[in-house]
Length: 375
Image (cartoon, rainbow, N blue to C red; front, side, top):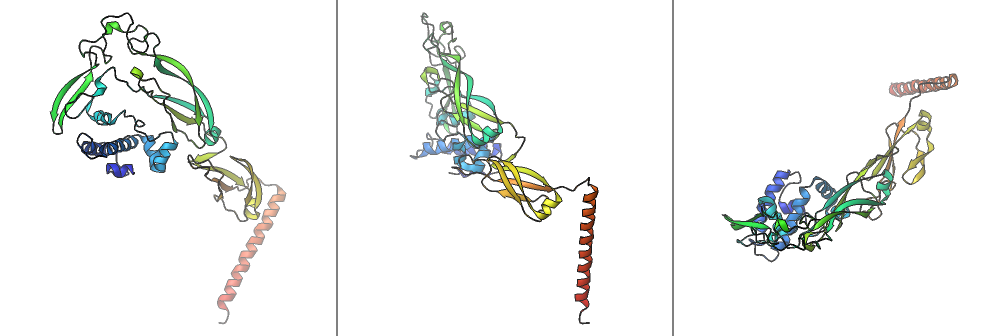
């Protein structure tokens, strides 16, 4: 499945183009409009494509590695992985509030229905070596857990009048409108109870009616080999607890890699520079250099030129999701011209200069002889 083909946009499409394309396709594919058996599945796939291409980091990863790249980076392709709890949430994200075709009342308007917990994000710094070879980190995060005072109900155990009279305990109020697509029910948060469905005076004193309280926990993060600066990891279920026993949200870990003093990284390749003398460039040499795997004896070929690159295959960074494959290590050679010479070195260079000068003269004589031969 190609996300660009699914949305019928060009690979260079702007976010506005993608949003317009999604609006048009969503109206056609929504299961309440499209009665084909696979309409719901197509609508979910459309939501995945839209959410991926609207996120700069995910879009860059998808453009380079496809859906496998998203999975390897922690964005598992599931119905809840792209920020939408169900297919109606995708549609309502454009029009505001909860929305349902046919004038029905959305289940999400019920404040007592299970709600997915919030996703969390944490940024961590790792070393260049940890990014290359992978690592395991322990991080501390604050997340929301069930309130032990009220059993996560959000209601004071001793309260008598607990139901909000404005929304009758549903937490939201609705208003029906007619559009070219049919009747829509727009759902908004109850202004009295702010979505809890309970009388504000009956709220639990500890969690203030939320049913959730903040708590610190330690999470182990396994960083795969080959991640780069700005890489994101998704830890399923490690976010905040959901209201009314709903599923927990996810934890997104964003990695920031400290630069190396020895190596320059270009995606999965490593680049280093090596300065050699004119004699080494002319005659060739063997020099020990440092690679990700340790010391390596590099052979400098005779007649090596400045800015020439020597490729060391398979000695680069492990390719993320590449099943053991690695990038390459490129050594860029720079031939140094000496600026300070001893008297002995000057004499040697003079002799070399005279020899090379004489060879050029001799070569010119040979050319003249061959030109005028036989005349």
